[in-house]
Image 1 (cartoon, helix red, strand yellow):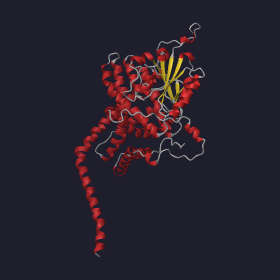
Image 2 (cartoon, one colour):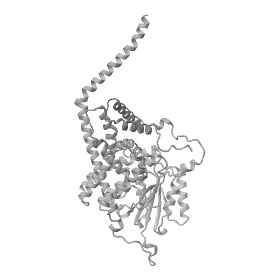
Image 3 (cartoon, one colour):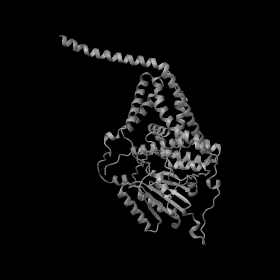
Image 4 (cartoon, one colour):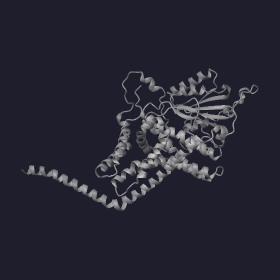
Length: 513
């Protein structure tokens, strides 16, 4: 009888303990909520709204400028004095400037033939062009393949140089800098840079694998806006834009005057562009010329790329902001453009406000209903910004909701990388070459084999995404029970997006060899 009584009492004891703990937690929350959490959250909301307005004004400004450029703007051939190269019987091909084409490579098994072949097929007098393959490959088999490909083109009469070095110091910047030291470069007037995944001509990027998976379609939408709007606006207004590191032509005189390639950040291309601009050189963007390139189609490759693209500009801003302010060769307005528009709004605020506001602060207001976000800040401004970003890719307008959710997830890594760059923390100089697949997937598609993930399930888990997804899901559930703003619709959708990417189910899953 005693045994039965004690058994019956135990569950009530546990229930009482659990109720006591809940009451204590609730009491602590109620005590700190009013004096601490509410004022703090209101302050954070105000900061986020200010950043949202900064981004909104920048997007509207660029939208107005691009419309005016398209309607009334003078074309580059009218803005600048130039003359087409004419055939001269006496001078022959010497009327053409000498051009160096640099192709930096690192273990590019899938794309080395495409990139070398495209460069060797450029329409330019063969005695006025030098193709320079800068091979930093660590795989001896790939090195041999690249060297054999260069020898094959050399046997056809192409002036192609295969250059290697005994270290990878400075990564891509180090390879390009080393390539400029060769004696034959002294005879060149221009240098053209192509990454291994770019082919044929220079100008606006055209993705060759945008339809490979949903993730590449999302990337296409972001890149199209960058090229068709951001680059065009910078070129048309201040003759400055961030060089993307590939598919561009440089006067060697401009490169040398700016101080050449530097490896102090992971965005050596942007570093060079800013320094050249401060020396008074003008940049011209030609959106009518198209360039084929490959987008990363695996989540792992894309995350590494986005870390480099977000961390590098933040770190460069830290290193150059004082130099830009003190510069006396360019106008004050151009310095304001470079510091405020180019760096602060586009490279810092855009990443931080996307994650902090829409994935942290806005959900937090569900838990603290005393703090309200005005509808213009929660709905209208982000909607207009999203629509302005989407104009570059009309064919993907039906994917707009997926793009928003995808970009919000990626903003987690971009924000983290931005702070790493600003603070010069651990991974500030991390450089991992973006994996290219080339025609590998097409070749493997014809082979009837089970599609198995390259990575084990445990290796595909991304803890940060899962934690943020759990937080958003909890806020969504709380909003369903206690809320009144119907944020749960967005919160559930965004939580699912974080969970999908957290479990690695996005991008191309590559079959085993």
